[in-house]
Length: 390
Ligand code: PLP
Image (cartoon, protein in one colour):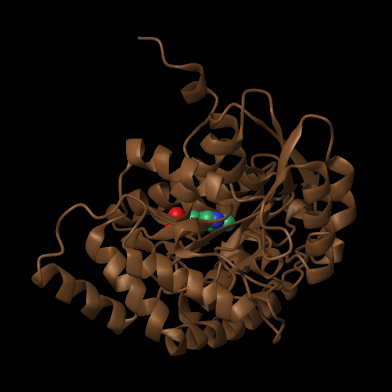
């Protein structure tokens, strides 16, 4: 049987592959320490769980409006108005099956065959694959480890060419934790507006920025650049609601209509009662989010300090998200040359699951998630030190 070209151009998500291998080992009774998943270890906010339970009991079990329940669309528009002065109305919000679906539907709505999309790297594995799935070509713009992987306007602007249809920036960034500052964000959006191309901000990790720094949201520029700014958000990480599958896209009406039309032929609405839970999380779970941020900040210290004690490993403290992205290339040798082989070695010999940097576009690094308990983290650092020491 012949597969379509687009299916052969992409592979299984590297992060999901590592998680799958780790689970296979665990199923055989091996005690694996899994730092591969991009998934908070906290429970979902009790208010969200209760709201979803109530919704189910009250019979909220049917299709909803394709673009999401009106209350959630209105609450999201209101949230960005209050926090950032964004002029978006509820009709400019589409609720999707996680942020992942929002990004894929946007790619399908905005990218034609051969179009170029400027994408800072290292980048979350799914972003370039989705661009390719839509027929486009990701144009990588490397961020520098020595610069804390900060996302800078200059190299992004230099990468914009005649075939560029848009710029896609994920800040805080998975896997590096690098962030885009307000000034750089403004310069990029201004140029996108001048050039008549779009700017998509993937703000999935918006609430996890450390050291008291305020997240620079593209929503703050929506009033000035209403035809340019498109924002993607998610309940997955912010509220520890990964399995609920609720995300959203907000932007110019014609873009959101296109996304909604695509969704109407793909998934239809996000799950009805999950949206009821998400609405309640948005309304009244901010204390849960603050508690998670405080805990992530402590874990970041543990992981950065632990990595600093391992000779030949370099790690800048991530500015946001919940990943460390240390450079480990000094440990490459026969049999573990490159990040993929090193991660296989760590999984097989130390039973430690981490993700190869190659999956994100940088083969000198590996990604460790600190969305796991302090105890797991400390044990994992011990195993890493022992495995690399040998
Ligand atoms: N964007 C980034 C950068 C991510 O890391 C993820 C998940 O790992 C997502 C978007 C999508 O998450 P979800 O589909 O669970 O909302």
